[in-house]
Amino acid sequence: MPRDTVVLSGMVGIPRADIDEDTSIEIGFRKADAVPVANLSKPKSSDFEVSNVSVVNSDWSSKVTGEVKNNFSEEQDMLALHAVFKNGDEIVYCESTYVNDIPSGSSVPFEISVMSDLPQYTDVQVYAQSWM
Image (cartoon, rainbow, N blue to C red; front, side):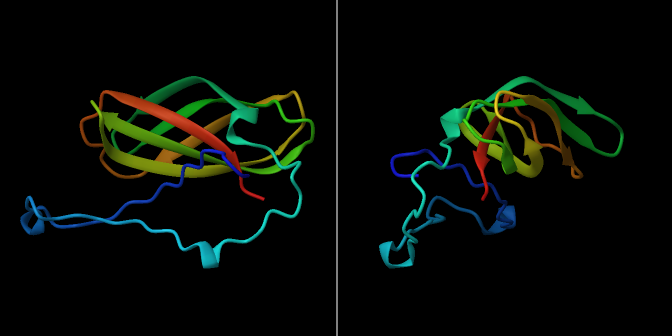
């Protein structure tokens, strides 16, 4: 949606030995690749409310749990959830999942599985957005 905030998560692996003060990663957007929004009644990220977020650690994995509420006027068939782990202001890890069939005005639980060792972090934030 125009003027909406979108969070996309993914990881880029770079061996630490190859990183120095000149290392940078650029993410670009080419307007020519943009697709016009056909239906302006699509939900914005602000139409979803994430609550009760917690991280559960075990010997082999971790998971982020919580609830997401659909405050949009229509049921949502596919919602993307992105857990962003931060250490201070630095993003140190992120993971995603999807939840389906969320009626308008309803909340559903979610679980985002983390199958690798988490780096040290001070905060985790979960963002929700329509994926369809």
